[in-house]
Amino acid sequence: MREIITMSCTECKRKNYATGKNKRNTPDRIELKKYCRFCRKHTGHKEEK
Image 1 (cartoon, helix red, strand yellow):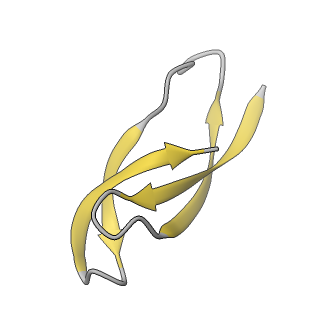
Image 2 (tube, one colour; image 1 turned 120 degrees about the vertical axis):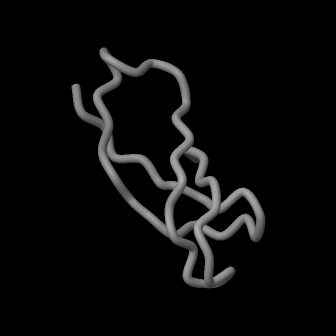
Image 3 (cartoon, helix red, strand yellow; image 1 turned 90 degrees about the vertical axis):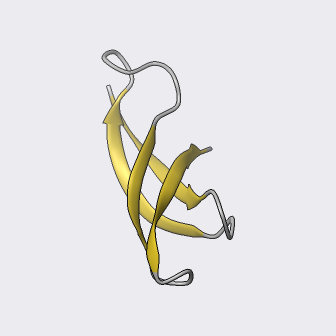
């Protein structure tokens, strides 16, 4: 049930992180605050397909 997803920054739109999530527990797209090395600050990261 676990699926690998990529996370992209909401400010610079670059793909920074690859992580896994359980589709059964969280069927909708997730958004987390993570560090963006291109922006050099903590920003929101949304799930990409």
